[in-house]
Image: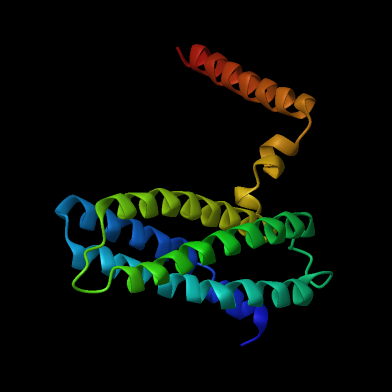
Length: 182
């Protein structure tokens, strides 16, 4: 397994991990369960740890694919890489806060709901950043998600009009054929 393959395999964990953390933390807040809130912090710590190899393998993956594959749009690599750094930093700040919370709110201390709500808001932001980073990464190799390069948007307007014209002509010919049958 090379760096690019590793990156493709593990790059989903930060997005999914933050979603799971959000879900578990929201349940902990609603139920006012200290154990569930602390479980969410553990999931966040693990997710932030997995983010490290995702980020590192991304740098190595870039070196492997640049100039190598025809079906890779390299114009998206730079924006993906730049935003990945911000997401990586945000994720690891959230992970560091989660580690700190595990020491500050050790049993018998409870993790306060105010802190949990703060973490929920932070995780919403981090998850949004991770999702946007993933979207930028997907555009590198998936033309179907590139809004600015969809096949029907890249064709000239005159071609679209001529296509519409042909379909109108075709439908008129069909109507004429129906009238002849009557």
